[in-house]
Amino acid sequence: MSKPSIKEVRERFIAPPGEKFDLSSRDSGDRKLFPDKKHARKCLQEDAGVIDEHQDLLYATQKKAVLVVIQGMDTAGKSGTIRNVFAQTTPLGMTVKAFKAPTKEELAHDYLWRVHNAVPKKGFIGIFDRSHYEDVLVVKVRGFAPPEAVEQRYDQINQFEKHLSENGVRIVKFMLHLGYEEQGIRLKERITEPHKRWKFNPADLDDRKMWPDFMKAYEDMVERCSTEWAPWYVIPADSRTRRNAAIARILRGELEGLGLEWPDPGYKLEDFDFS
Image (cartoon, rainbow, N blue to C red; front, side, top):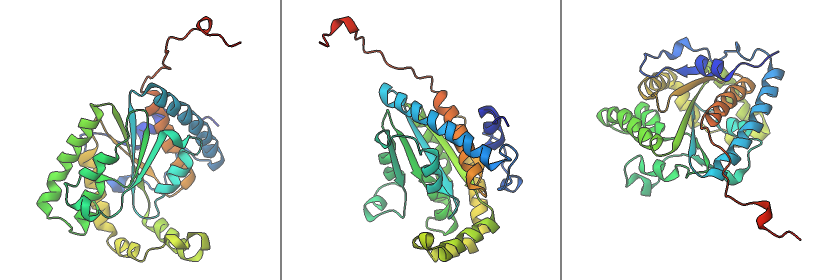
């Protein structure tokens, strides 16, 4: 069985910039490109190795940075995605930032202040587990900011990401599209399985009760913030294996697309004495 091309995966899961987006038209259990789990794992393993190679190249050149943004409802698999897609990548060239409720210090600044501080420097892959998009998701749904303030943030975020992209940061954004029924199964697992029990938070059930509001917020987020310089990829997340394989394919393509080459410091063997 041949693996889907990077182009096929990109085109299937991208939210085309500037177009209307209907989240209900996307299948959270989509298996078309990866019908076989075993094959998906093999594809992931291969791509994870290539991602590691390109992270070394990124670190060696120190010319660009890559920011991977991962958003999704609770149990969609944000940490699982990081663990599997970057399983072969050296941690020396990576940064991971998990965004939680802002601190008192962070609230004293504009909402993007803490985000800009976490953007990876050149030579690094930076990963956001949740991100600045919380300010048009949970903040919007729970009414933590006035509607008019939230409305301004879509354009502000787009301009922020454009600024980053024009200054050497490649932004790759993944929305983990989890189905309502599958989330229910996974939340129950967090109580019944001992090694997952520590993850359970009763507040997650409050968000679950607001599922339609969150889905509308995600739909608005994708439609209004999928841009030419930072498009959204809406990844089916009901299957962990297929989710990981799809993301690894896309990220591999993004890294290869940077067009980086190994730097030559100009050293010659004959210039040195190794005796």
